[in-house]
Image (cartoon, rainbow, N blue to C red; front, side, top):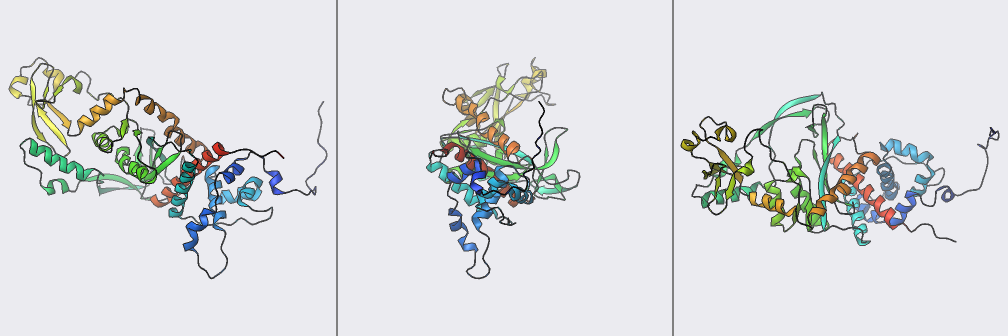
Length: 442
């Protein structure tokens, strides 16, 4: 039978507390129980004067931002609108029914300290398991029109390992009887052409495929096996992932401690990264990568490296002898021209006009090969398999639930703040859910 609710109770007067309106297992209750927010007073006490009008409670301001980033609200203005009508949010702030919600601006350094305070609290509760660290990055669409840009010539970025590489290149050349490169050979400034946004000049032009071309930022992050984010770095979207692993792992070592293993995808499988990890006595958990060889030609693995004689053997049995070590750190091994000219395998070996095959080998290539061997190890293989459950899930949640798919902010400093807030909210939410005891029975 169809029934109608005829009684309108909009003007009903009732005695009720705000606490009664918030469900017993609401996330804000779990967050409030998970961490004591009064630590914020110590972080900001030097920012306030002893004279003048009373300021807004800094804990309230910080909690407002956590509401925004935990519940994926697009802006602070929208967050304040939500707080006006959401009783759970008001309860979390400690506001009554009629308290006016303030507006404010945020400070990047403060939220970095809050991020690490939440991480430390999770560690004290034995929730962090950082012996295995999972590293990756994701692109966040910048607040910039992809059609509004200027083409500019800029200097190429200096790689974190450049000094160490230069030393080892010259040592390798000397070991082979070659003269070391003079400093100006390395110091020569290299340039590249980029597209610089006229809206947000600190973003980077990112090209994934024909359909995905945009200005973006890269959010690089490291997570533990439980999905807690241990560190983050934000760069322009055109920065290669491999350039950030070393500073990101150093950040984790400084703030959390040295991991036993680091897992990352194929973009990080480079001589420099494997060398860095082995030198730090950290196990690299990296995937198999297919050889990039032109169809119809021999693959690089068909040329066998003889470590004792430091040479390569081609499929026809000829020796490719060491020629030089270039400034990029690659040794060059060259075949004998006079023999290659009449070789039956020439068409599958090289298209060189002088019929000479050149095989290159990085001075740190042994580290890549060792990482390849380790990926089959029974203790290492499961570590890499955890990537999809850790760092990939962190990025998926950040984009779907915490508004990180695109940004309304501009500039590296503000985007770094967004990354810190987003990952701090994810860590706090996870800690709150894992430690929640539930309401006690009367």
